[in-house]
Length: 112
Length: 113
Image (tube, rainbow over all chains, first blue to last red; front, side, top):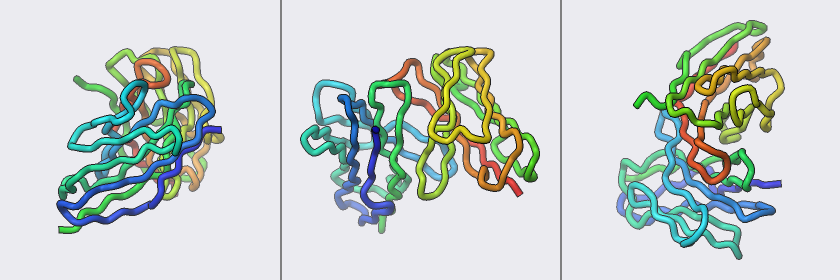
């Protein structure tokens, strides 16, 4: 069965510091991988996705993620955190069927 | 660009009552989804639909009913609401299945008292 594990339900970093949100997945087939962001009282928005090709994927707002098949990981990074990055982040996997499976989310807080 | 809209955005209902959450999308996407979001559980798929008149169960379908008579609409009905169904419900749509971006509505906050 496919699943997604996000390590750390809450991550806090200082403004300007590196952001690293961890995501590991399990899938019996080559997956499609996504990161979504959710701001308070809003729906989810796509940050970036990996389908095929280059394993380093760049998204909106300076975020990027690298697909590492050997580690079954798809960690999200941003070199320098901004206050506006405070939100809930969800990693998701689509194993080739019509469904997408979400992780339980990581809440990112930014300290001034 | 209206996108995907949900109604009502906020609803309080009593245990045992029937409640319908509406979802409408303007993109003519084939796939539509209903998720519920609960603290500690992330998003869990309730039902999805690959096309009009085609629906299938997700991870947590019990207590819910869906229909899709038109491509653009995908209502979710709680036949007899229970307190455990208090949640935030998100409707979403996608042009095709896997690999395509899923677009979300802004959510419907449902409280069952």
